[in-house]
Length: 85
Image 1 (cartoon, rainbow, N blue to C red):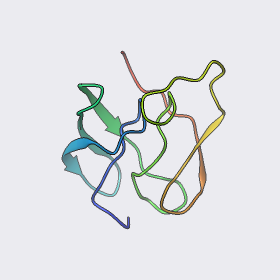
Image 2 (cartoon, one colour):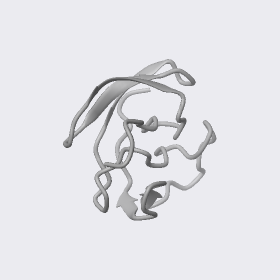
Image 3 (cartoon, rainbow, N blue to C red):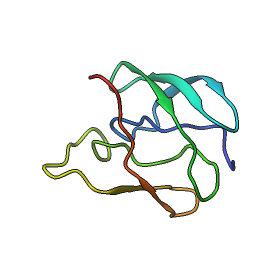
């Protein structure tokens, strides 16, 4: 893990308040979405700076991608379920 930062799993925003972060998961609240999130680490580097399931900066995909990119190592991770809206 190269940073103590976690991106929102819904929108990909870095504007988050992380309340718990360890090697296996991160929890917090997205200040953009105003929703809680539970993130899993990148399969490549273990970081939590991963694109959101709905796209970058709150945009939404018409067709969901099969994977999302880690901003620390560029590894493509399987799309995560962002949870209830």
